[in-house]
Image (cartoon, rainbow, N blue to C red):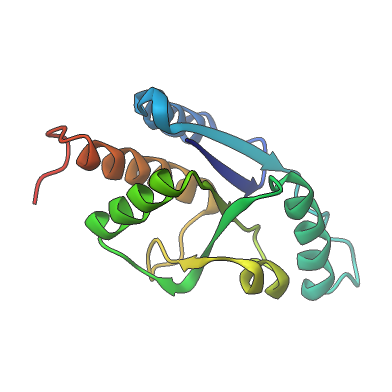
Length: 156
């Protein structure tokens, strides 16, 4: 199974890239992690948040595989424990699904992305930099897969 992360934003600081790569490298071969960066829409004078979200949503949908299981990250989404996330991954593996996690830009995700998603997932109720969310998500995906494999990384 390939797990894709589509993230609005590019040109991340080195520490974000290094953190993400550390966990992506640790993923087992049968659950590889792939990052697709989407260029954010420029914030021009007079451009509404809704318009920016809509344009970014078009780019996200263009990067989404045809039969992907879309998981939209949203601050109001369900905040599962790691064990619950690992159960989702196990089910997706069993179903042959293509989980695709979407991290929005500075203005968040357009409603069309949230409405289309199979799951709204919250990483934290705190407001976090979007680059940091990549690192946290990659770590949690690694932790969830290590739990499935019986690896001692995760402790309860």
